[in-house]
Length: 117
Figure 1 (cartoon, rainbow, N blue to C red):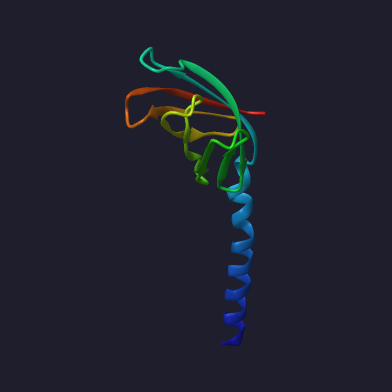
Figure 2: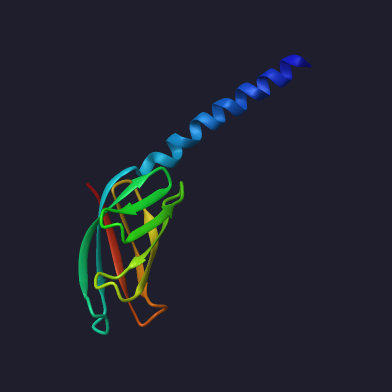
């Protein structure tokens, strides 16, 4: 029986070691662009976000979020004039992603694209 316990410990150790690599498949710098409707104060904008593991941070420190191993992302932040909360969500693939945004619970909305740099 000690052999089985040892194998289980080795298996769990190997599995734990593999998780960061899977979570890191989106790591890097991404260009984030959004287009919003006419009812938004800002109709388009471009910024950079950094993905490390499952965390997303903006170089402007106004955006932060998470991404799953499957590529589902959610980013929260403040709009470019600092007056409203913004939520972005969607899916990343290898080198690109797309999704949606909503400002202040729906006062305006739009689309988001991300491109790995």
